[in-house]
Amino acid sequence: MQLLILSDIHANWPALSAVLAEEPQVNGVICLGDIVNYGPHPARCVEWVRDHVKHGCVVQGNHDRALGCDEGPRCSAPYRGLAADMQRFTRKQISLAAKDYLARLPTNTTQWLGGGVFFLCHAVPTEPLYTYIAPDDAKHWERECKFAGQPDFLLVGHTHLPMIHRIGRTTIVNPGSVGQPKNGDPRACYALWRDGEIELRRVTYDVQSTVGDLAACATPRTAQQLAEILMTGGNLPPVDGTKPPSCPTRRPT
Image (cartoon, rainbow, N blue to C red; front, side, top):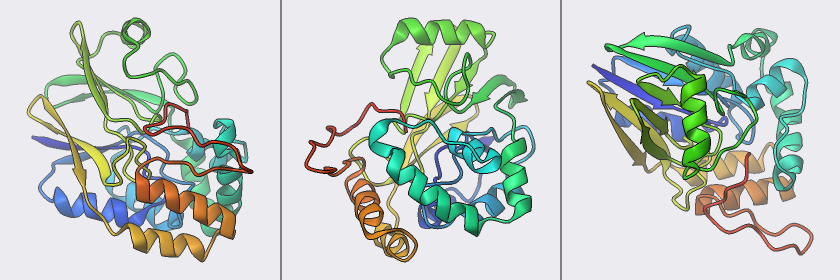
């Protein structure tokens, strides 16, 4: 049995398409939230998730909730302007049905898949939408595993940083971001679960296609900043002369 694990698609259809083309034989898909925002293809990405990811195998991300419930995504300061600009665009692009779908997604779920117990959430079990924990913060991850009931697999997203880490009986997996990688590599990130084993994977996609579509839907400043992030795999360019964070970034997005 093979499961495709996706997170943080962020309305980037060329990236998602490349991942799907790379893994045509999977038996199911898990989506860990943030289907929308930052990218130029929100309607198409939401439609694909609705049609191909089973109920119970997709959870809400902070940007999904922001669109669905007309809220802010509570991202960190360097990304607030970008998120707000693209949220205004996205609001005009998605249907009321898609908006309702995003609003109603669960923030976490526990599933029995392939003989194992999986806990799914976007951020962390104790606070599924917004909290950020660094990949190497073992003490806090141990607390999260206990809160989740020590499942076989704890699947999270949010940071855009791929990781596999084992604490006790629980394997913690962050597949990284499909649509906006932040680990210094611009390729689309995802994970593949195969008969109990997890592998982090990356695939090249047509970044320039996404960059070109951004130019047609975002303000020039927003398009330029988002293009830099996509092309470098996480480098946020300077804003008003300030120094950008180093890459890979550890800022929540």
